[in-house]
Image (cartoon, rainbow over all chains, first blue to last red; front, side, top):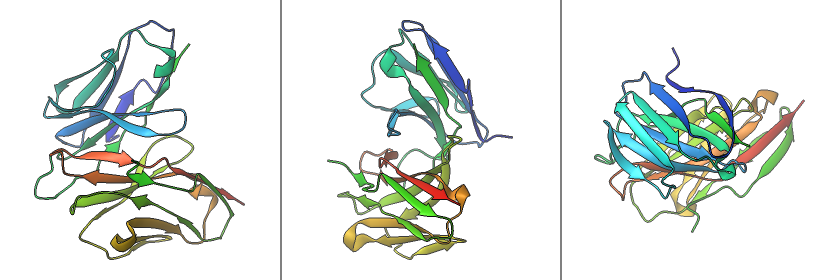
Length: 118
Length: 116
């Protein structure tokens, strides 16, 4: 009964390929996120969806396209993979992503997907 | 400008020692939240604590304690009587509401190595 799950856990692929990472949360949360953790462990937000609506889209190459079929799922598709895309990608979710009455909900993270582009 | 600074890149201690991980943040908001996350060698990110800007009370949870001081913009984390299982990378993070949406800005993390 994992709260936030990601598949696959490991992904090794060749440069130029297209790949997808899937994320699912069973916490009933409205907001989901994708973060990238680089080789130096630095974590940075990429995207955020609230109830299937894109609300945060950081400076990320167009080759990255998130898709949220429903509020429990947020997938990340990457086209034409490059060496620099090698990283750990974390999915997270929170009850509410909007800043309402100064209340911030904690983000809970999935186990991460380790992507290696050769 | 970096919004969350964890100046200690790596700390090594021997089991049972106390250790403090520093976190200094920068924000113009009066309302914000601070977090600590733990990333053990297995790689997952584990939530430890959330603190809002209006609550400067220190918190203790078992061997963990947090010292929030707005005057110095710091949110430090102390582990008392460290154990080998505490070995991990610890991240401090800041959430601000100025954009209307909640986003987490992480520090670069402090790697803690506890040896037996």
